Amino acid sequence: MSTLLLVAGVLVAVFVGVNVGGSNTGVAFGPAVGSGAVSKLIAGALMSVFALLGGWTVGRRVVDTLGSDIVTGDPFTLSVSIAMLFFVGLALFVSNVFGVPASTSMTAVGAIAGFGLASNRLNTGVVLEIVSWWFVAPIVGFWVSAVVGRYAYDEIAARIAVRQSEGPLLQFTPRPALGPNTTMRELGGTVLVVAIACYMAFSAGASNVANAVAPLVGNGALTMNQGILLAAGSIGLGALTLARRTLDTVGNDLTDLPLAAALVVATVSASLVTVLSALGVPASFVVIATMSIVGLGWGRATRAEGTTLPGTAAGGVGAPAATGSTETSAHSAAATGFGTAGELTEEPPLAPTETAATAELYRPATTARIVVLQNLVPAFATVAAYAVFRFVPFV
Image (cartoon, rainbow, N blue to C red; front, side, top):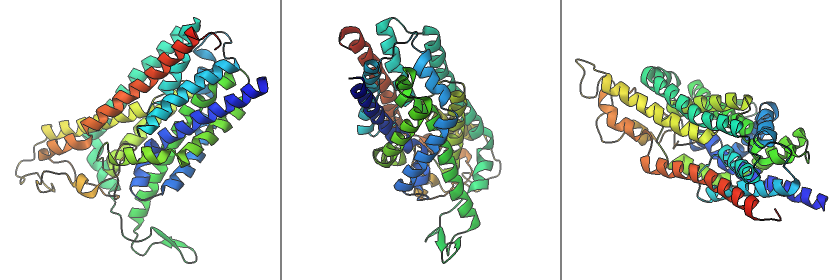
């Protein structure tokens, strides 16, 4: 019977990992896939590799937190672990069906907390510490991105401005060489987009491998190394299958961030998640990235409102003609996990008359839908776990 339960536990863990991969790959590789730098297949493969690296190196601390710190004592029997992981996987599956990258860490913590409440074993201090970071980290992401948008964005955009040429980026005839129309600047920009995506995949693995296997590692059914390998493999499977839906959502629906903005948001979000994971705190990459996008747009808007360029023509030096739409929209520029990316292009520096255009850096309706689901999914996992563990005797 215990062998059958272990097999069931592994299968449910795989189910969770697949949904984690489906949810997080879109967040990590939105700009790379949208810009044509990599295909969805290559994005899935890279997600698999770097999620494993993140889980193997940094993610162990998060596994310890979820597997032994949130609930006191030694409560994770195999049946409890299976039920708990099922709630997490089901909640994430619902979010993937809607094409929304939900917070897997918040969902996992919610399910474990629901069990802790039902069994009167919840370590309130640890939960409060985790939740406090959930408030602090998005605020930090907002303000860091706002400061960059206010004071440094134009310089960053000027340095990495890239226009995508026609034809292949590289050719192999017989040795690797630049494509017929490829410049070194274009190659460097493409490599930067892919490198940032891989960094985001690393941070996602560091934070999220625990969500799939922490209860099984906590009760000793799997060793730490076995759990990380199982979780990373499952995340890779989800990255190659379910992620296509979330890639479409985050690659086309949420915002029109240009390449420079995409890289700022990616770097800020991935860095915060990696630091929190190293501290053993399950972090919400999706929420942090969303607030970073809003902060960057707000910072650019305040710069536009406070800038005057006497003696310039309408729109300022180098400003695009007032057409009611941004240069960003014209080029369908790249975005990090939350935007479109038709070409690797950059818009000119923000001019005083572009305040309205800056307001379009994120789309309120889609952003509101994502934020609502980001909170509903963990809430569903928490309530379902509490109800089952509190009122279903055989569980």
